Image 1 (cartoon, rainbow, N blue to C red):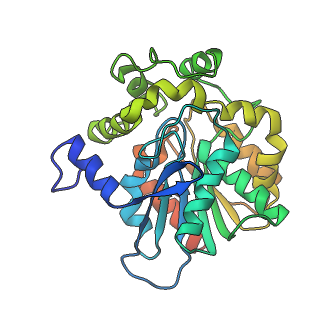
Image 2: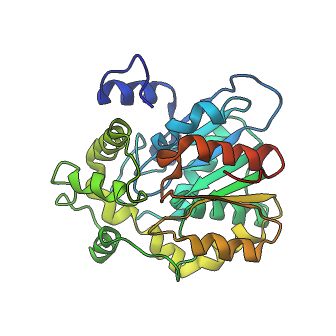
Amino acid sequence: MRDADVGDVDAAVTKWEAAGEHITVGPHQVWCARFLATTYVGKPPLLVLHGFPTCSFDWRPVLEILRAERDVVVVDHLGFGLSDKPDLRYGLRLYADGAEAAIAHLGLTHVDLVTHDLGDSVGGEMLARSLEGTLGFTVGRRVLSNGSIYMDLAQLSIGQQLLLGLPDERNDLVGADGGVSFRGGVAGTFAPDMPIDDFELDCIVALAQRDRGLSLLPRTIRYIEDRRAEERRFTGAIESHPSPVGVVWGDLDPIAVYAMAERFVATRPDAPLITLDGVGHYPMLEAPDRFAAAVLELLDGPLAASF
């Protein structure tokens, strides 16, 4: 999904950054953007939360469809993309703090929520705060997608296991190959034989490399330790929060396997499940049109028979 007026990665990243702003969250800067609806019809703004180890640029292929009738807010978690990348202990509460600060900065009091991968767990922390009465806004409809919400089912990649085996500290040997391994790791979670948009992936790699970001992967991945320690807090809130929720899941995800989606809807019989056949871990990159249509179906109307 290359913009007609963008000819290279640097230009695309610069254009993306200019569409948003950096806001102060504690001692750091977090990048966020609000993309206004093409046609405003009164639908709630949509907060979308990205996964590990990428950033909100993941949402670019589906952005125009999602914002047709609603504002869309994207946030780069601290340590990712265009946000600051300080050398510290990262975790789900820290990521949720950034997203909550972005919503406050934009003056929003109610949002719908679409989450992916790490974003599912960040959303879970925000939902837990909502249940506790401490979240600064209310959440309407939700869509959950391809994230390891049940750690006993997660099939962590070799790369993820290697990162978790390293000390929780910056390591400049990670990413020393110019992002080749990082790129291969992301692409390796796609469904077999899925066409890859090289330009989009090149941009995602460039954003990950920014400010020595790849060297922080042994730190930013520690959210998995949070999940293991407090799964009932994060997944429990995803399951029990009273807001309407639906699921869109690529059935060939090698990490957040399809059995997770099946387990979730078993706990929430009111949650419709749209299966994206032949799609892996990054449905917004692998099958953007199908993914966006499924998300809008769950946010706006009755469940369609098939996607």
